[in-house]
Image (spheres, rainbow, N blue to C red):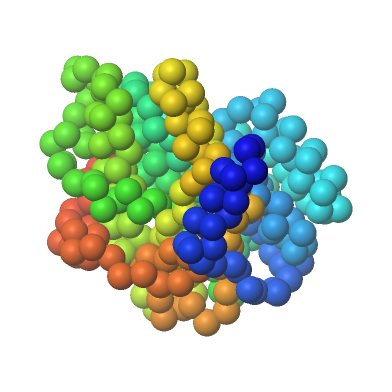
Length: 311
């Protein structure tokens, strides 16, 4: 990177006062699942948890990429308790299969990090918009299927990686639930809007999940990780990614910095009374009015139960 550009990027990041996870907690004997843990923020999160001694399950779609990440994380952390389990969030059948295998083979669960996210066009196996299906519905079903195991831990947490772009999102139930007979999104703007909508769903899901978990040992948090240079846009056309590349060098955080708020929500002691809240820069942040709408959050829960076959 050009020296002036590097200095400018450094100045921007300083002004953004990127928070850091200050927790020194160790995780020996504890188990964490990180969806999308084979790259980007997910891999950086998994590496940190492994360094703290946790058993870390990388829940990923690509066997090849996940096994490479397992190798890297084991080598760098010195922790051999890092394993891959196949999970395709665009298939509710795959989510159920993952949960069934996990519950049969793993005796405990302390941390569920719903990190995987994507922006793209197309449909899930069930015919739903892929951003909604992967970013929200797959994680919703995964969380529901693993809740009883989470409740058995002394203190456990669900961390949902959302994004500041939730503020541009809307919950249009007819559109969210439109099936295969409607055309997949083609324009870049439509894909971005779909992504923003799914991130609002993440925040609303976390809010209603906290209500459902009241009185249990499980707490939950959503967060904005920062503007991070990841593979989120891998399904975006190449020419658009090339246009974004110079901007990313200037403005985007690296993945280690981008994982800090996820780690804060997963590890920081004393956050229990913030269950259901939204974090940014390792601190609680006020949510927009539409993200605090309990009636919409409750309806989203009910619609998600219906779509995922839980009701």
